[in-house]
Structures are given as structure tokens and as C-alpha cells.
Length: 219
Image (cartoon, one colour):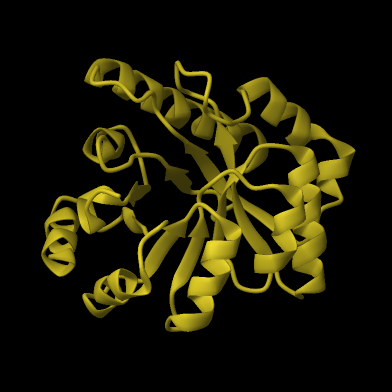
């Protein structure tokens, strides 16, 4: 079933969009089934769960930390995590930089923005991001690479609202690229869209979609 569902989702996604299979709470057998069907990008919400799975699954998997990240958890995954999506403070950037330096690597990250009409979502607003990117403290960080932005739309059936929120994130991405990342080819990712809205996200500029239940079934 996982193989079939994965193929159905992939058939709807253009070649330039990365599919991240959101595997949080799913057993190793489910991830292995997706891996055997060709999936290499997996997304986890919790650091501990990701670390445990990474130790038991093939080493060519690209692990994405898509949940809210606490600074005290960064050290556990600094040696292997492919991309950290939910970076929403200078303090967190500094800790990621410190741990990446210890691991002798440059860590790719996305800045998370608050675009939803809900109180439950984490993220920066544009002014907070501009303050970080313009700061001397940020300019001292040498072991992180900001590759783009991430956001979550409101959990609503109103597709127009969802599309508007995704367009907002695309506009933020374009403004940051023009103001801070001109000519930097690494700044190219817009991580938005989940099982219920990834097609709307792609229409509005997403380059990474995070799809869980559509591949693995509900919890």
C-alpha cells in the first residue's frame, strides 16, 4: 500500500519539487517500504525519534527535521541531519552553527515563517527575520547555510485562504533573496505544503512538500 500511495503522490509532483515523506510515529518497516520504493527524503518531528531511526536504516537517507526544535536537542543530530526546516530564532541559529562546527560540517537550514491564522504555529515574521539577517551576530556564523524558507498554512478547508498564505511565504522568500541572498544559488527552497494542501502549495511556488498521511495512512 505504501509503495502504491507513494507512486500516486509522486505522479502529482513536478520534477523540481522534493517530496519529503513525513515518517514521524511510523514504524521502521513503513520507512523501509518507502525506501525500497525509491524514497530517500524523510521528515521527522522529534530529534530522538529521528536519531533512533537513522541508526537502523540505510545511510543514504536524507533526514529532514521538520518539527519545532529546541536548542538543547541540536547536538544529537548535528552529525547527520540533511536539512533543518523550523529555524525561528537567532539563538537557535547560533546553537546549530556551534554544533555543526564541532561536527566539521556546514548545516543547511530553512527559516520558518508564521503565515497561518492560528495561534498554534511557530515562526518568524518578516521584520524579525530581517533583524536577524542584518545583525552582526548572524554575520559571524560560518557553519550554517540558509537555503530558503518554510511555513505552514492554516488548518482550514478554505482553499483560497491557504493559497493566500502560501503566496505570502513566496513573497517573503523573494524579498529575502533580493535583499540578502542575491547570487547565492543555495537560497532556493520554499518548504510548504502537506498531505491536505501540497497541490495548492506547488501551484504557489513550493519546492519541497512534506507529505505523511497520504503516503503512510493516518496515525
